[in-house]
Image (cartoon, helix red, strand yellow):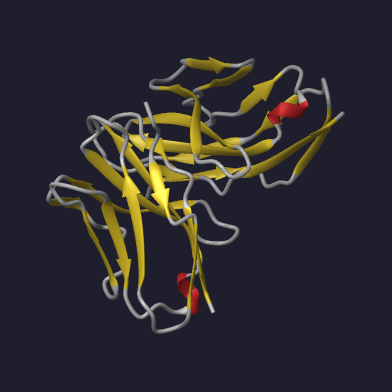
Length: 113
Length: 112
């Protein structure tokens, strides 16, 4: 049973470009969570999604960030017009039920130049 | 608000030494407590958990006891190995909530 997959593992974008981060949950998991880890900080919750629904986006910045989890395909975290402060590691987790133990992917390291 | 504070690293130990990584928490509700481990290049893996006061989580020789009176969940291992070198994260989840709250992580290096 493959774990949570994230791609790309490393992403470099220039300021003003768009970044798209993908997360494929574990098989049978319909709940996805995105976290961000800024340098020297812990993981911070961003958003919780179920298939086709955003359940809790209390941790998402109000502008430039969006997330989706379509009926088919991976969950996508999209960052428009990236700035240097968006440089971080972005982790995705999935669970079969919520609240429940969350299984984490290896993360995507975004670098904005 | 809900938060976790854990011991800053990095920590360097010799093989077979005793390990303690401190973790304290602040919670508005009734939390479950977790330790996650991240090996180089990999995602976070659950190491152990405790869901109520006085519970002890244990796995792979690691232990942590949920202490409500001191709001702590310190991680311990009696004899570390080189293969334990990783970053360790303490986390909590309020039992009615969706999200985890993580500490900043403690990097452990074990030298032969």
